[in-house]
Image 1: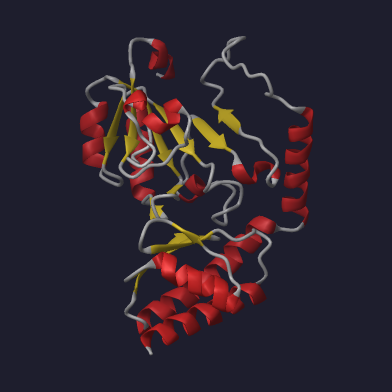
Image 2 (image 1 turned 90 degrees about the vertical axis):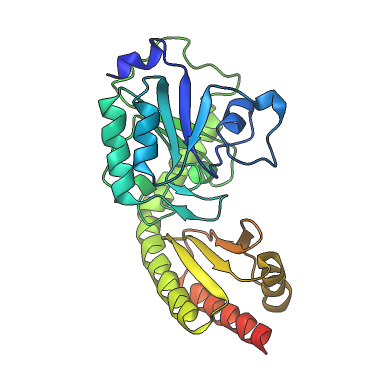
Length: 278
């Protein structure tokens, strides 16, 4: 059914609050008004509510869609989780309607969630997977993995710097280190510890609204200003954290993070919360 990708279907379905990048086509599939402009506007991209499979089928059943693009976990949106049953059903619908399923694993992939790719928790096989960020440990590189069902044609992909020998050497070295140092299993174990400790904190600190994530991709939604809390963690405790909007602290530490450093963060986070209460 993937042959129908090139037979008149023109639309891509993305999801609310999605972030897929800053180049023109990626921005068009990104639901973020801060980086959109009329230049990127197109009728070829539509959005559906995340985890609403009925809304997705209503779109795909029109026969107008060539592909669906979805993040393994929505990162920039604040670590919004893609439900496993939803992703499994999405795979079924894409197969049913001859639609390409594209998994954006640029932030959630390469061991970040305790599996090599976040979608592996749901046990699905996408047609295309996008990779970047950690793929070469900071050296600029991106890659896509394409199903054999999509037949390659010479000239389909082209780029001045594509296939850089240096970038590929860096990416191979990263995979070697990830394997020999068991970084994916470390991300799973230390991430499980962090999530358990943060949920325990949430039970005793009402200003923590919700803890979301898998592995070392964690979002902590709080009442009040997350940027202010992050500032206090940085200047008072010398711990740098990420952010996602006004109310979410985002944790994306190195996959090599030792449990002792995770414990130090939990202690510092609790101290900041307690001092705020006082």
